[in-house]
Image 1 (cartoon, rainbow, N blue to C red):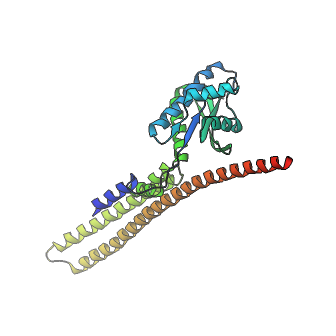
Image 2: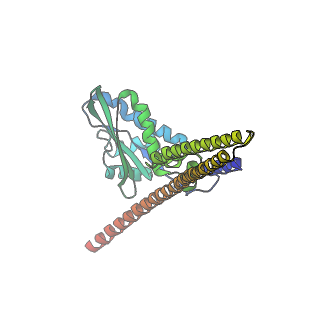
Image 3: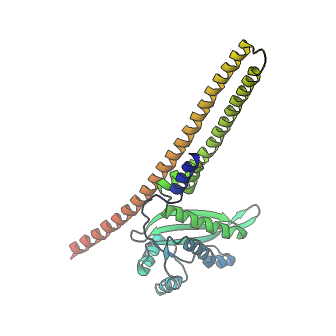
Length: 299
């Protein structure tokens, strides 16, 4: 029975059930802009976005604007020297190259005890509305750039394609907190230690129950059998069996709440992502329509 339970959980966790539909995204990633006077950072203005693009491309969930075509458009509109540093400009470039989203970033120095590091500030821009969907700022040494670039790519991936509720629930059914971790939700840090503690309590109460049964068997095998000791041993078995069932209930409760939380958080995340896209698109349409009405009224 337990084997079939885990088979079903694995099928749910790894996509045997339908998830929320994934929106098609055509992303443009520009070269980052060096905001500092440190010429050494110029080496990272192309390499960091390239690392991010490569990592995202390996997921096969996005399509990307050709970097050469993007560079040509940027040069044509006179941004070759200054770079793309604000959402309005990013949206303008994105419309020209047919992107749905633009990913822009800036580099600067920061000082720490072990020397100078690199501060990377990035933003994901919704092209149609020119709004920033999300932004991240990280600080890293030159030796940590590769790792930090991959983490940035993962953040974009989790934002654009959150794990579906059923997959999140299936993963948390297998390992408490896994579904929450997959969507970068902090509750995963709560349920994993809770589940470990509950399992520890269950193992402890089961061990005590088994010891009580062993004590009863030892008394039963004596000749003559002392009736008073048998009754006391049986009472101990009954008491420890109750404790074991309480531990079973607590463990099952932690597991069920953990699964429900993973499903609900993933559901809210998917809805929030869908709602954000629809709201941004609607605001962009209203804005364009308002401009048309004002323009018509002038003439």
